[in-house]
Image 1 (cartoon, rainbow, N blue to C red):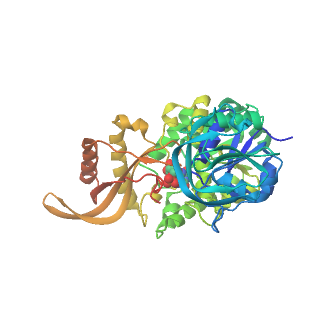
Image 2: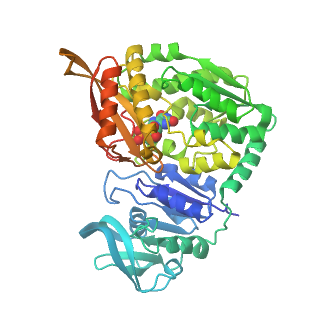
Image 3: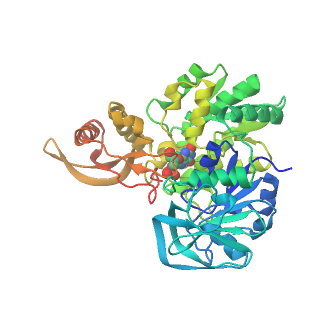
Length: 510
Ligand code: XMP
């Protein structure tokens, strides 16, 4: 018997997360895995259907994502989208070539044959395309369902429940995209509507109870919304079998350590151990300039401290989210990744193999976790807290980290946050923070020459941290922030504004 869930294999499309969320919106459980998940691991997941996502590569390219093609022979419904569609076509003997006329944006498709997947789409409909390759020929196993002026837009295997679409049904510009997803879920796969936030909480509470039994769990609290929501969920499930620990790594913002403890005590009647590990973090980071080294050192020290305490516990719990997982992995296999998230260093992955890790949010996005927080009664102040990375200010100071640099960055960051808080735009911002560039430039203050560092203002809006847009403040607000920072913070004589979106930049600077 198959589990009522859809597995999405991610080939690196910027839209993959939208597929997962859209399916959960339809109340069907869906989980995204990197495309190199492997045949056996996929079998263990026991899904009811598979979706192969889009991606930036070409199926004929030598440097394409790692993927076990045996997956396409499993007796399961499969939907291939864009790159995933090309994989299916090629696997079954068709040909993919560079498009004579690439299609990016809105296109009209004409439905030429009826099939469950396209039920209710009418004769023509608008879809969103984003492809530079196209299907040149299909094997005899397939039938064409729809096409644009230039390309084959949808196909179906003649005997198996295998479908491919060139367009992106998960994108809102595809007018009837939700109908296509509905058809796949409920007409092709016959999935059941079992996913909802309350069900997620109920199911995970019993799963956690079952897994933990009468053993003990240590929760690594970062102070952010994810680990705080997890603390509430675990406390509900486990009561005093849960202990929480908050490590002050000396890389926090002004007043943050105190605030985290207050937030915790206001929301939870559970014991919290606070460990002051500032010295050990700063000592180990003293000479490090490389961003990945910083991240790995920080992750390793966190882990070392946790492992010491873990001796008197049986499991470690972390509020890891899907974007953390996906940015620490890569569609090309483990060699290319964007950044190592502090909660996914090697030692943690070892704990995971030994089934000692509890990470119930690893497939969710922050907005979903915020909803769980609301359901569990977490207060608004914590729910709306901006994300703050585990490696903290270490990845917001380029180059070496010193106590003095931390001090001036904290001051500048505090000013920025104070001023942003006064503006209506604060509610639209995913994050607003300062970055310290240890690059000096010349300035003039009170008729004297100064030669000081640079502060960057980073203000972004985002839905889930996977992509982001830079945001602007009005001139008056920017002027005030720049004047206050240069006037009130030592050694800063220049303030600049980061106007890069993600991609191509990431939100954090390192
Ligand atoms: P980037 O910089 O990758 O960040 O665009 C995306 C989101 O993730 C946060 N971030 C982290 N969070 N541990 C975390 O808990 C980390 O190592 C880490 N690195 C980045 C970042 O602040 C942004 O919200």
